[in-house]
Length: 208
Length: 377
Image (spheres, rainbow over the protein chains, first blue to last red):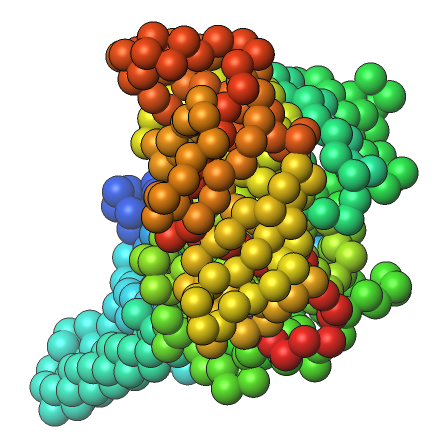
């Protein structure tokens, strides 16, 4: 999640602020995981990042990193799946930032990076936060891409929904399934409430 | 010296302005909405790029398209006070004020934090957040923030336009104080001639993207093109004079002009909010053409306090009426009279006349105080 955040901010910024010929194409590409069957995304990941895939082999040979059928792989799969949600939320936040304030910062001697760090980013924080929480909640529920890319290995790549599914499939798993369902309910609710409280505090600071 | 020459075309609008003005001082860009004032200041600040032209401030070239020079906006050191203040909502007043100051390190500091706070009366506001400020307070903070960035030039884009009359009075005296105490050149954009009158040392009259006229406020007040912008009612000569006497009992102040003495109602001069008026201070007065009566014989037994003898230098038709320009010892005064009056008095160039001006019709704006040590407004 933390790894994908900077990329999401970058993608949102490029899509909102930069005008270039392939923008529509990039926009569509970013949103692809939202409309593709998750299993298809998992399969593409497996083709690219699997031990025989072009990127996967290179990663293994150079860094000794294996993604397919590992925890990191599960994280990658959920990150890819939730990326569009994050980008969308951040983009809306960025569009809400008054460009006049950036112009004001410019006349006060702030260069581009300085401006982004001291004006744009703090002002879009509530939206970024909302994006992160939504993406996190969606990541917890990600099923298809994960099971395709990293399978369902106990203690390694068994995510909450995978565990829940396994429990339902096993003869005496009802009690476990119920507990897992409750856990996901609590996790989800806590996340949403927390983000709402934080967003409200931020908005109050901004006087909105 | 401030010198600006800029060309810019966009969205079917073409801007072509050029002016020069001595520094320090306040240059007023005056004209109707949409005449290109804001575009001009955006170009000077570097928020827009000109198609061609140059901007020079006190020997430093900031833009010169012919030489391929264009200093980036954040390195120009040009302060900008926007019409809508544009304070950073996530920072306190102090945080806003220090934003530019922090980024002006390595620049010779002309004005410090404490000085700005006291000059603009910000001490009580420092811990507040922008949304807790009134419109006038916001503009003062924006002004302080721009000043602290140690600008070589300060741009003020209609800083009073979003304020009502009472709030404007919360800001105007501070602008006057800045003009009189600091040596930072300023460009002040306005479509209110009374603001220009109070602040400007040099006026650039803009219409439809072009400079129509430029000069001192007194010179500009006589330009015929001004009428279309301010409206026929507001036409009137601007004169600067020095207060030579104040009669507190008769509520009358005497003003020495180049060509005589003008008596004005002491209403403004004795106003406690403007206690810094006094004998010796320079006062700027606008004599509205509608308030000036002309006589061809020396008048007597009239309530009017001013009868200034002069010569008619110009008679111009102005719609259904006539504008007569009278030279009074080098000072020009405009009078609006009917065509019937022109005929009856046989007014023409060279006629000897007395301009009768009611003292109560004249409002004085202090332009310069006798010395810089008088108390703050």
